[in-house]
Length: 291
Image (cartoon, rainbow, N blue to C red; front, top):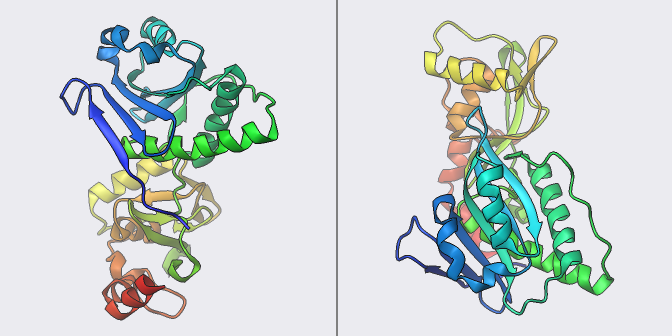
C-alpha cells in the first residue's frame, strides 16, 4: 500500500528554470536539479562536494531523450569535468545524503541499479558505454539502498523525467483492465489507458499496410515508428517490439488498424465494453474508488 508523500522544493535562484533542491519528509537524502549553464554557479553549495550519484539529461542526435548515469566522491567536481567532456546534456539531477553516510560502495551500488532500471524501462537512450560495476554491500546496506532507490525514482519523476517509470502502470487487480483490437489486415493488439496516454503492449500486431484515406500526418507518424523499429515487419503484419505509449487511444488505434479510427470505440474489453463506455461508467468508478 502506498502512502502520501510531502515533497519540499526550494528554488535556489527564485526561478523555476533555475537551480532547485528537492527533499522528502523523513528522508536524509537530498536532490539537486541544476541546468548545465548554472553548474559554475554552484561553488557556494558545499554539500555538492559530497559523495553521490547524478543523472545528466539531454537529447541524442535523433532528438530522442538521452541520459548519462554516474557517481562521484565529489559530485560538483565531476559535473564540472562533464562540462568539457560531454556536450549532449543540458540538465543534471544530483542525489546526495544530508548526513554524509553514502560511501563509495553505496554509490557504486546505486549507479548500477539505476542503470539497470533505466535500461529495463527503455524510455531514454543511455549514454553510458560501459555497464557500471555493482559493488558488494551488506544485507542491511542493500535494504537501505533499495529504499533510497525508490525515493530517487519518485523524485526524478517528480522533477520531470520518466526515466525509471514502467510504461505499464502498476494498478490494484480490480483496476487492471486490458483493451483489445482485432480487425482486418491482421490487426491484433492489446493495451491499456495510463496517466500518460494509451500504451500498446509489446507483441501486439498492426496491419502491414494502410488504406488510402488515412490522414497523411498519421502515415508519417506510423512510418517513424517503423523507422525506429518500434514496429517491425513479421510476415503479413507489423509487431510491436516494445510497449509503446501513444498520446491518445485514437492514435494508437490508427497505427494498429492502418485506417482512421476512433479509439474510444475501437478499443474493447473481452466483455465487449468499449473504452468510451468504460470511462463513462460512473458506477464502476465509484466502486473502484471505494475498494
